[in-house]
Image (cartoon, rainbow, N blue to C red; front, top):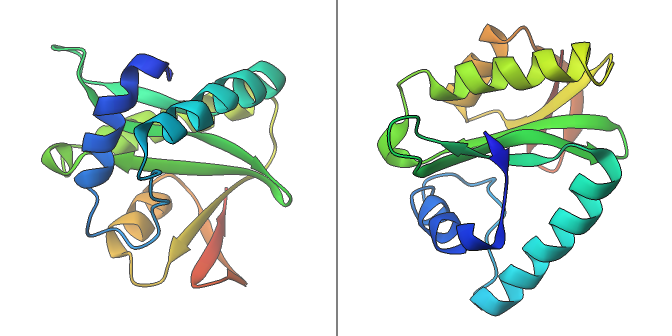
Length: 149
């Protein structure tokens, strides 16, 4: 894992294209120049201020960007977010990296509570959250239920 860089732009579009079946994934801007500016601001403000954020997940053997997983600050606290390229799902990558991110959050950042927002029909994400120790709450936002660790 590493912080995103502007050079990741093409790989980010490929990652998002592989997520066409995911209803809760924020789409990228249609204009790559606009998305590049959004990424530039994200790098400056989120990484610069918080020291964490969404990180690029790279395949160990090739260095190819295959996902993005990390922590997002939000009003209710810190939320775990994750997406893995469609070609790399069901290999335990999300579980391995999310576990490392949660451990880092708890031990290094001393974050006591981590949230995850998951649609009730997203059974693979619910299963992953439960494997990581998250528990569902009654709190809903739009069509997503809040899970807490």
